[in-house]
Each structure stands twice: as structure tokens, then as C-alpha cells.
Length: 575
Image 1 (spheres, rainbow, N blue to C red):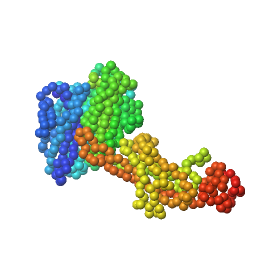
Image 2 (image 1 turned 45 degrees about the vertical axis):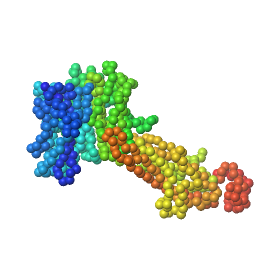
Image 3 (image 1 turned 45 degrees about the horizontal axis):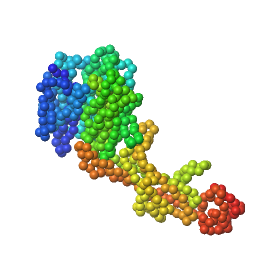
Image 4 (image 1 turned 180 degrees about the vertical axis):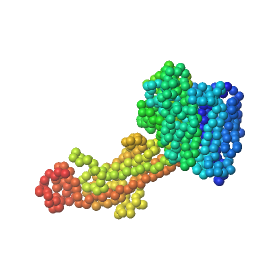
């Protein structure tokens, strides 16, 4: 008996009830799903939701540090894996303290019980039914209003082979999720004090990157079955280094065991454009993308397995509300015959912050790739940028240059471009009344010289920008050809244009977002003052005085009298 505990972490948040010291504590745990015992008892919440009551050799209990405790009687399943043999879920406790902290030091919450999986390589007290566990968490309501949440699947799978590709290498990363993305900048990581695994693992303080010790890999390499170890680590935050825990299993595969691989995590930006946020060749420990309320993101997961002929699938952990998954397409039997699953998510405005989806590729034997946690930073959809430039038309000898002064006889391009950091946004450029934008201009018009700006003449799409960090933006661009004629001399007019973006769409999947315009309406206005020089003309190749005089409805004699450098009125002129 025993040995059904796989994973545990805790987080907390102050409730919105004024000045009380009430918090909600979320305890997330994973247990062996094939465990048959009265330790798992089906139950229902008052609302009818299916729950589990969980017991053990030592009853799992949450102690709040003020002589009160509660048991696991309302465990709600949030994810499961038949191949990896676990169920993942959470129970939320509400607790009120008498004071914000305990006489100047944090309240300390513990979650403890028995038993872990048996035969852990680094559990000093591993008995016939497994070893007990105990996680601790700090709470100080004068320091902050909530803690970060550690996101992970219950098990990290590591290859022990001496020559392995980066995704299966001896590195993995612990990550946090929080409603406030700025909170993550101050997080530091450490292994638990006195933890038996201190010689088997090391952890990077700033990033949460865990390295498996070479000795642990060597010991597992020649075995016939996988080696199991547990890792207990803490994420600390704030001036008092308030800690939240994670207790996780690490399975190191023998050298003879082929491990599935995550080939790529690829963001789909359009029908013809995708961006790999993590690939097998360029492994990213914590791939990240940016999302915007009201705009659906689409991400393809690609994986394969080169062992015995069998198909592979995906294991996912707790997902953000509203994120949904496709069925798995393809067998994944080789790197050229990938198994692909698509994630789609349209976040609501109340989901601003950082959300995480942890995933691995798993075969039917229960062996999986090293998990990756895709972090999705949901930020408000800001307005577009707008550029308005007048460019000279290039010739064989002179390139196009920016200007605001035009000459009769020459052609120009008024170039308009709107851009938006949200690659899913739709942009539109239109003339804008410049009544409110003309304090320095004697005249104001919509479009110069009676020109037109048609929507079908605009080009829109998504393009890649950035040199060191690649990102993608939406754009809409177009141009207006301007060729001032003889009667435009002295033209000095301000012209304004506006760029607008779209609202996005409210989410239709459960839970539905009841929002009319989740992305918000934004507008950017830019103006340009155009001037046409009076009594100046750019000669075209092959023209003479007679032809130019006809354009101005004058005669060659009057024109010649103003151009002393022209020796004869019948001279063929050149630009």
C-alpha cells in the first residue's frame, strides 16, 4: 500500500473583502491514477461537481500555522494521463487569520502526508510503503496580496544517454504563473534546505533552470528500468523572500530507453506564416509568446518517437480557462512523420497576466519527453503606430528621399503605413479631417490635388521585425501618387490621416467572455504639411521653352526672360 503521491505545490491570494485577513490557498497535487484503495473516495461539492476525498498512510492535511488545519475532502481533477498514470487536481481552502502576519514574521502553511512513490533513489526515509512529504509556504499580507503559482506537469522525464539531443538533455526549468506579470521579475529559486537531492540537482537562482548531476545520470545509465528521484524546490519573492514550494518527481531513463521528442512549438500567425518559438535544434527552456484579449492565438505542437513502432500522444497539465485542444494528427513515428496537436486560445480581459500550458510527448509505454511549459503573456491591446512620408520618385541616378517640398513637373509618393505589435490585429488607414490639427497651417484638406485613397489599394499582412529578438507585427500600407501641375504653385496645405485597429472578438468557447470590444478601439492620427514651390518647374528630358510655356499657358518669350542660363529658346532641355 501507499506510494500514490506524485507532485505538490501551493499558492495563495488575498480575497477581495476589504480589511479582513482572509486568503484562499490553492493546493495542487498529483496522485497515481491506478491506485485502487479506499484512500480515494468519490464525492460531490454542494454544486454537484465531482470531487475526490483523499487519504493515505498518514492523512494528507493542510496546517495554516495558527493551530487550525483542514483535510483533502474536495479534490477537483484538472488533468490526467492514462499513459503516465497520474491524476492532477486542486483543492482551494479559504482561511482567515487574526493578523496579517505572525508577530512580524510570515505565517507558515504546511501540507504533509504519506506516502510518496516507493524506491526513490534519494529518499532517506523510504520505508516499505514509501516516504512522507511536507511542503511549506509563507504568507504575509503586509508584504503582498498574493503569491506566484508554480506550473508543471507532475513528472520530468530525463534521458541518461551520453549523447542526447537538447530537449532530452539533463536540464529542465521550473516556471511560475501569476495574474501580475511583473511579479515574476523578482522571483528567485532554491532547493529546499537539507534536501536529500542536493547532490543530485542544482538550480539556477534567477531562472529556475535545474541541472541533473552527472553522477545521477551515470548511475541510471546502465539500469534496466527508470530511476525515480524527487525534487523539492522553492520560489521566493519580495523583501522577506516569501516562499512557495514545489515537490516533483524526476524520472531518469536508462540509456537503452528511447525517449519521445518535442520537435517544435510553432505559433501560427497566418495561413502562410508560422514562427517556431522552440525547436529541437534550438531548444528553448521556457518558450514564450504574447497574447491579446479578443484575439485568438494558435500554437502547433509537433513531436515524434523513434523507438518501437507505435504512435505517440501529448500530455497536458492544467490549462487556462477557454484554451482548447485539437485531436492529435499524424503518428509521430519519426521526425519526418510528426504527431501534431493544436492549441487555440482567445483570452478575456480578466485574464491579463501570465498563463502557462505545460506539455510533453508521451508513448504508450508511459515514457515521455522532457516537458515544456509555454508561457503566454496576456497584455492589453495597444493602439497602432502610423507613418506618413512624402518620397521623391527614384530615377536611374538619384534614390528616393523624404521631403515635404514638391516641384511642378516631378512625381512623388505619399507613403502611408500603420503597424501594430499585435500580429492578429486588423488595421485601416483613412483620411482624417485636419480641423483639429492645423494651428500652423493656413489651409487644411483631406487629400492633396483631388487624389483618392482606396481600401483595395492597401496591402495588409504580418511581418517579422527585430534583429536580436524576433517578433511579428501587423501592418497595412499604401501610397498615393502626387504630381503637382502648373496651377499648384504656392500650395501650402496640411493633410491628416488616421490609423484604426479592430476590437477583436469575444470568446465563444466556455467560459464565454461577455465583452463587446475586448481589444478596445484605438486611433492614431498623423499630419503632414505639403508645399509646392511657386514659379519653379522640373524639366523633363527633351522639352523646350515652347512646350513648357504651353503647360503654364504662357509664351516662350516670357519664360525665356526668367531663365538667363538658357542660351536659345529652341534649345532641347535636360533635367
